[in-house]
Length: 343
Ligand SMILES: Cc1cn([C@H]2C[C@H](O)[C@@H](COP(=O)(O)OP(=O)(O)O[C@H]3O[C@H](CO)[C@@H](O)[C@H](O)[C@H]3O)O2)c(=O)[nH]c1=O
Image (cartoon, rainbow, N blue to C red; front, side, top):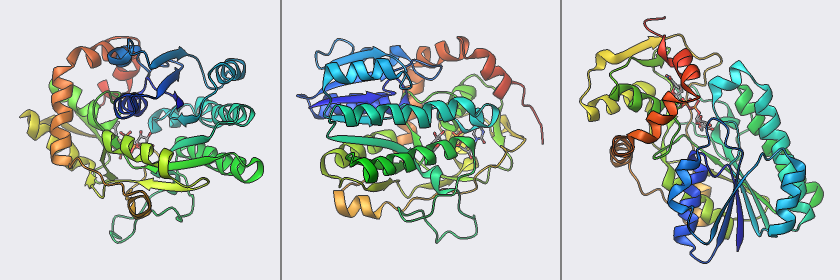
């Protein structure tokens, strides 16, 4: 099997590259990544010397480069992780989200059709379902929940999902789509809630919690997400959507407090700041289809997973310190540095 993993230098993509090379030692894995601010070549160091791995720098919207790569490599599977993924950035500047997330997906699918890829897997998000109210804990997103997006980011991912389904129906492209809840774990870029709070707490900096911190996310350890995608590639039915989530709902405040508690840092570091525009209230996934059809089960409980994640950030300080002191510094300081005591 020859697999293309796009966005493989990012958080979930890199974890998936490691997973596939470990679990399928006979497979060849090619990573295509544009190395934007959130992609980091040093993340892939552990596999750079692996004979079954190849790294290609390039943008999924670059049709010429993509077509050439598909022609040379004759991929069996394509797994599309490449995306602009940060909601706050999409509120500031939606354009790049539409370009990468929608047009990039189209370019990849055109090449997949042309070169006879056996499966095109689109890595999507539970954010395409919009949000759920806090006072209805009985409600969960299923694969049948209507698409109803809030942010430019989620609208771009939902658009891509529709396009993927259209390519299946119109052109018979063999596709699958997975929609996962919030991930956490090693190599998570320090703009997302968990790695941002860990890195700032370690530096005794204020932790900007949006609004009242009551919003709920359904946290899943990244390794469990990788296992689910592996199962979908091998056992999932063509044309189907699979929800992935851990039934592990927590308020943002509880997550931040758990991090502070583990690091033995004071809760006085928490600073309540202006809420995110259009902020989704609650995400909660019903993963029963993925469980029943594919036998998938998440294996890492949040209490263990958050400890392991914090340990990883302590053991790999240079990985995130290089990021927050490098090109990303200005954005980091602007977004998270000066937000003391806003209401
Ligand atoms: C960065 C940041 C976030 N938050 C809040 C906003 C959200 O309610 C929650 C998590 O925020 P984020 O880490 O940005 O993640 P969220 O918006 O849920 O989206 C994530 O999870 C999605 C899956 O649900 C993925 O599709 C997205 O790519 C990924 O970014 O924490 C804060 O209170 N303070 C912050 O500084």
